[in-house]
Length: 318
Image 1 (tube, one colour):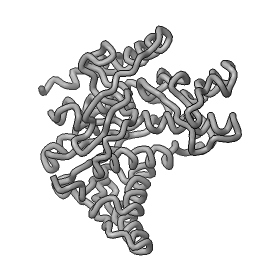
Image 2 (cartoon, rainbow, N blue to C red):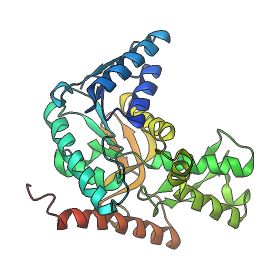
Image 3 (tube, helix red, strand yellow):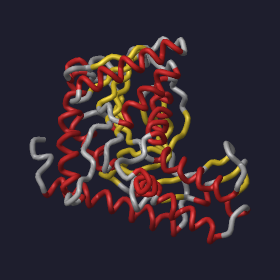
């Protein structure tokens, strides 16, 4: 590998562009390559970011891939490409549209950046990570979905808002799929090492759990015309940096399970150690009966999406 010097980003919308900007400001890599169907927009953003990098004296340059064949020899590729859910569109409609987009993108990545680690951001996140893994043929450690860091950050923010103190010392933990069935874990959440249950009532904790599950929708309700992108982009940037710097730190991410937690052939969010080779180790934490039930419900939701893909013969070419 190129020692983590080249990052590709497919989809230069709000999330993808903010990931690129964050990485450029940090000087995390030598080159960032943007790929978007709106080539002129991508070129404008790339110029703007390159000039911002020059302003902070970062060595990072931002370029544009006019075709997937220009997205070569990347160490990491972030995929944010996909369609939003439009009026009149069912979840299954969105699933099939974005699965087809993901399939095309992943085939290009596998061809032109065959050694890359792929970070999926497109929704529905867990199902798209599953599609990316199947279509790439990569080992599971090299296809990771971004969700757990974002959901945990949302929970931490809500804890801080409720407490009125502890900013920067809050460690919140969320497992499961990225959706209504995610599994916030108050039992594994602390403020400067102090268990959450010692600081808040059970009713207050339940309120935070509910708000965490609806964190994305709450932002959409305010924005009206779009969805969150600062926090999703920063969460993605944290994953990219963990790979580029080989940090070996533990982050909650969506990965393909092969017996862990009792589940196989499904993607779900669990704590993983991230390093230069991607999701290098899956950490199995002890869940109580209630947490196990929620995790099962979450995995079942993702399996139903995978079942829909199979019913539509999505993987028939394999």
